Amino acid sequence: MKTRYVTEMGMGTDVHGRDYTLAAERAVFDAIHHSSLHFFAPLGKTADDMFIDLLIGVPEPDKVDADRVAAALPYGTVSITVQKGGLEIPADDGNDA
Image 1 (cartoon, rainbow, N blue to C red):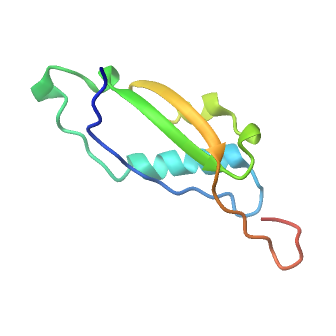
Image 2: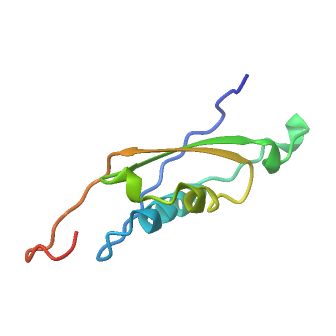
């Protein structure tokens, strides 16, 4: 049985490229740099023992390289779900998001 100990959120963007994988990697980087986990040693565990359920929301989920995004996490066993979400803001001329 898994028990949730931490919930963290991050935001990532690719302002001009519409690279959803890059935006997701940036969101993961943003999220993991907002926390410091000190409870592993008292539990007799290491960071590699944790299970991470990663949820990514982007406008076009099929354009995300989920393995590349999961690899952005330095520890643990990662389960990733990519679903429709996120936001695109078109440029005035419509050439980029």
